[in-house]
Image (cartoon, rainbow, N blue to C red; front, side, top):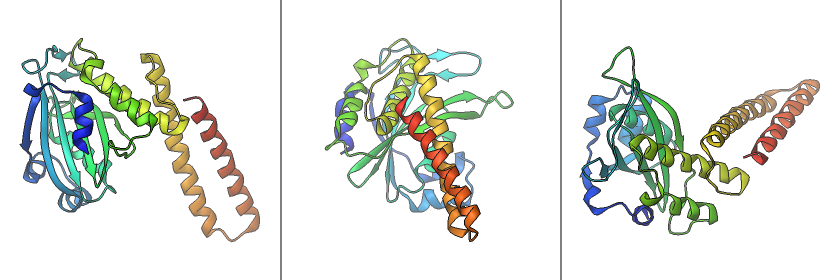
Length: 250
C-alpha cells in the first residue's frame, strides 16, 4: 500500500532512514491539549521516519531567508487506527519537528498525504509557525482513479524542482492542492504559481461555505417556525450554488 506510493516517488536508496519515532517524542516536544493526547494514544499505531532528504542524500541545496529554513525534508509515515483526527495529528507532529515534513498517513488499504509550510516564529526563533497546511483525500494507491494515478506519477522525485529544498517542497504542496482540486473539478493538473494561489483561495472559500452549509442545516433541523425554515433553505441553496460555481473554476 504505502510502498506503492513510495515506488512512484522513486526516492534514491541513500535517502532511506526507516527509523521508528516513539510517541514520547511528541509528548515532550509538542504542546498537546487533551484531545491531542487522546489522538496520540488512541489513533496512532506506529510512526516511522521513512526517508530523510538532505544535501548529502539528494543533490539539492538548502534554502534560507529571514523567515524560512528548508535545510532538509523528512518523510514520515503514520499508521492510524482511526482517521477522525488525522488533521489534528498532522498539526502537532509538524509543531514537534523543526523542519519541513511530508506526512504519509496510512489506514487500512488507504493513504493520505499531508504537507504544511513552516516559518520561524519571529518572537521566539526556537519555535515554528505552521501555515498553509493541506491533506489529500484518502485513496488506495494500489487501485487509484485517474487523478490519483496522475498525482502519484507527478510525485516522482525526478519531476520535482531541484533548485532548492523550498522549491522542492513547494512542488509537493502544489501537487497536493492539485489532487484536492481534482476531487471537485474532476480533473488533475498542476498549474503555475499564480494559478496555485487562485486555487488555494477557492479551496479555502469552498471549505468555509461547506462549514456554513453544515451549520445552517443543523439550525434547520432545530427550527420549528415555517418562515424561518424557508429562510434557512434559501441560504443553504445560495451557499450550495456558490460552492458549485467555485468548483467549476478549479
